[in-house]
Amino acid sequence: MDKDKIKNNFSKSAPTYDQYADIQKEMIAALLSNLSFAFQNILDVGCGTGFSTIEASKKFPEAKVTGIDIAPGMIKQASLGKRGNNNIDFMLGDGEEIPLEDSQFDLVISNASMQWMNCEKFFLEIARVLQPKGTFCFSTYGPATFCELKQAGFSVNNFLPKEKLYGLLSSCFDEISINKMIVKKKYQSIFDLFAYLKGIGARYSFGAKNKGLFTKSKIASLFPDFGRNICVTYEIYFGNCHGIKKQLYPLIGN
Image (cartoon, rainbow, N blue to C red; front, side):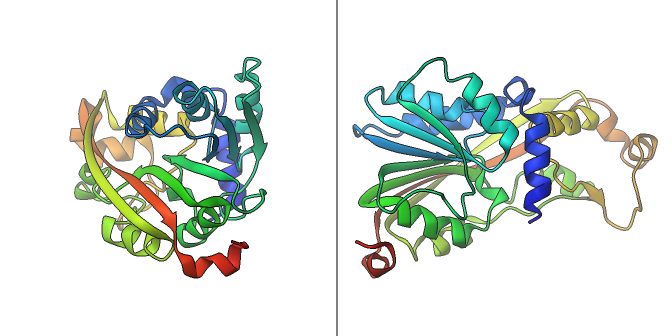
């Protein structure tokens, strides 16, 4: 993945992100609702504008919560929304190379951000910064996301299937569960969907198979059904992982 492009896209969208991120807000609410243990030290990877970090702090008011994101603009926006909460810190950081010491956190969360990372590297980093009996919870998108666009001939970014995620996670964690939720979202037209994705910085590579470069009029002529109200699918996975594999201990100093 082109990390410079990811940084730039999300930094540009930082001022508008919360205005558009309704799906992501639903995802973090569902993710946190499944947690009840009194966690004390929490890391939020891919924190964006800090909405998920602040929600985690509300859920666990006694905890220290650290949010990291690869996009400088997102961290700047997150810091503006901190509102004097001394239990929250934000810092620039890549989920594949987390700039924090080993075994610090009893909970790591990641909301709607894993698709921008190399998951194999990311999971190893999570295992490194988690305490041996710590918990990793995440939400991400499944391959049925935007299936309507794929069926219409658009070339859409591929998301990892559940089986692939489970295989990667099983190399790092003792206990793994992955649950699925399907959300249907309506947009006035495909152009409103593209505007939404641009607003949250998610510049997915929507092209067309063997159609050449698209203009607005060309999209409208090739896919007339997408010129009016459309409904698209979001397939969402929620993962809960507990305990670091013992064979990783020598690598992370445990």
